[in-house]
Length: 553
Image (tube, rainbow, N blue to C red; front, side):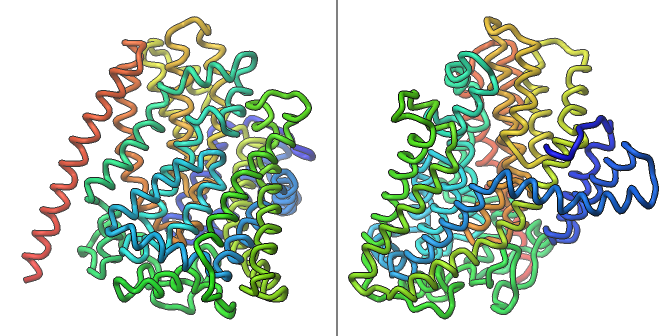
């Protein structure tokens, strides 16, 4: 990065991310925790490079906005897409499309289980990009899940668990080409061959659907669901450790920067309340009563189709570049093109039918951009902390060097790589950055013809996704919270036990795969272990609730 120099700071390199994470969990305030983490990283950088002193401290302070500006410049297209998608979401809601969709789906969805499963299926269908997935699924399904009292924490978990885990195993996605590019020549084919070894992604998808069909929860998620159902969580529950002020306080502003809305609607079965609850944050806008389901479906279809066409165009597909390479060349700009076309489409659909006038259309767009400011702020700070670790302090190189120094047999190495990739992904909040650091090591350790090579590649991708999945500074974690309108730290706290259960099963799977050199035994074992673990934990949760109820009586 311009103006920055990568140096080796040793053990100090992991202090900023750990400090930021600790402060976020202790204070339950994300903005200041990330800012302190970035500033601490700059102090370590300056003191290591130039020695301790007042001048170096001042330089550290001035480097914070410099790093933020670098990250904004480098991710400008993504920020533009977030703003455009926020604008599109509010325009659709203002036209009455969200209300009409809620009414249409509710006539066909009769239970919370069906609503949750439909949400997960929509998450899998939108596989092109995880950012698009997180925000779109939440905006579309939140009115429906609210009606059936599915907690916003559970909705955020479903969104998050069908975003990156789906994208990382989809051959036609921006992720596929990016990962293939890290592996050099024939990298895309290597990526495809490694898909069966990505145990975390595959087993997470299985875990989501199994939990939804079972209809049971455990740990902090059970407490969150009890709260959504109008019951008081058990005293001392894990959810209490991260609870902020009551959501009923409409005047308070949450971590995403938008006015709080009720976690669930107060009158079950009232479709109008469900729809209005989902768009209550856009107070002052006139919601059309004449919108139809097509006012939601058509713009989203246009967004998907033209996003893919935009990726193809930006990647040179129409100039002879193959499809897979073109889609991965500049996917975010393709998404921006799709969002712009979708906004034009909504104007053509809504204005002549007088669902809104031109002033209302512009006002809705402005409100949509404003609604994304909170998520954008956290993203910029998270990117800045990741950039500090990646481009200044050498956090990844330190952890990677520790991995290379481990004196253990190669059969155990995929399991070790999985854990190290998870730690790096958790610390830096990025799957792609973690993968870019770990894959060159794997290529250096294993020959491409070695059966362990694909196992190691799969373990690196799986660990990176898990670490990213549970990291409070991960962009997909942040966007999942924003899409579900869930308090960010509550989402992290409720998701970690679920994701970590799958992670433990995957670790066992990589120990087995290291010796068998086959994915199928590990996957079958993983499915069995998940089923048994969930049934046992659900039974323990039920016993805990029964004991709590008995004690209360």
